[in-house]
Length: 107
Image 1 (cartoon, one colour):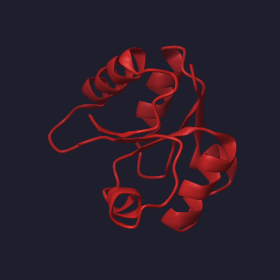
Image 2 (cartoon, rainbow, N blue to C red; image 1 turned 180 degrees about the vertical axis):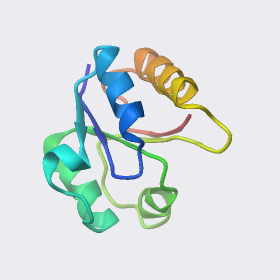
Image 3 (cartoon, rainbow, N blue to C red; image 1 turned 60 degrees about the vertical axis):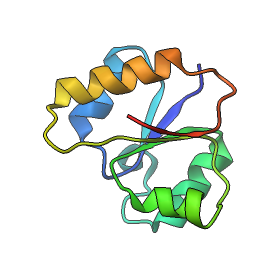
Image 4 (cartoon, rainbow, N blue to C red; image 1 turned 90 degrees about the horizontal axis):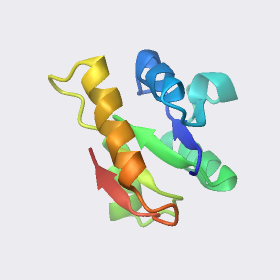
């Protein structure tokens, strides 16, 4: 199970819910990277070999459009979803994800 990195767009209760489900969660707040540009957030996750979890679709442009390196990306659609639903969806995705998977996934 690879650790995950929740950028600043992820609601803190979502990160907390994932921690309660047993995931090794690092947040931009905990890591002191709040306010850093998206490219630096992505590079930080790569440096640490963490899967980046985000609500921010700008990361999709960076990895799919510009082809920037990443250690795995989970883009979470937040519109109309409750915190618990987001936690369950991300948890289910991560549970089913191959540990070597470094792809981009939409949840």
